[in-house]
Length: 214
Ligand SMILES: C[S@@+](CC[C@H](N)C(=O)[O-])C[C@H]1O[C@@H](n2cnc3c(N)ncnc32)[C@H](O)[C@@H]1O
Figure 1 (cartoon, rainbow, N blue to C red):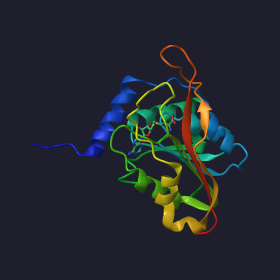
Figure 2 (cartoon, rainbow, N blue to C red):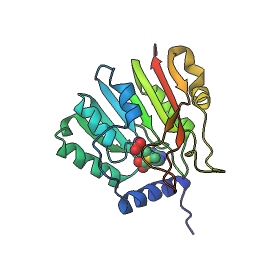
Figure 3 (cartoon, protein in one colour):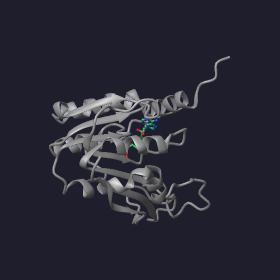
């Protein structure tokens, strides 16, 4: 009897999510991502775990050449359609990768991973190291991840990685990088509220590293 590998389980799990739950199209980048990216000179970008393309399309509209990567073919098809609808197909490219198995070739000015987290097997350390390798000299690696459950969730079982752990993972090469920011700020949750309608807080890890040399 064949047993599926954890990674084929990951692909099936995300595929099923997207097939059954299309996300509402916002056409907007995540607000934290936008705050970090807006001051940068537009160049090439790589969106790891691009989902249905909200951020990638927004990046392209800002003049960037963006490659969006995801494990789910359904999410990528929708991303490509959104890019076409927004008139930015020539500045976007969407590639299916299971990031443990394969990674887009080359280096770009901005590599970002926005909530690239998964309830099923996810090779965070491997992906972080490859993400760092994909940043060109002078470019930025930006990792934004959930670091806590919303404050109204008591006894959360979510094991949140620390920002320092991400730095340790990229670790051996840190002399080649300027740490622009590595921390875990708290913010008000605006996208949802507690079951009794209260606004809570949530923490994000934000890691921004600039490559100084190869
Ligand atoms: C929590 S969602 C975040 C999506 C998007 N970046 C955002 O912030 O809305 C995680 C995304 O990572 C993708 N993903 C999960 N595991 C992956 C893997 N091993 N390789 C590539 N993409 C993966 C999922 O399909 C999903 O689109």
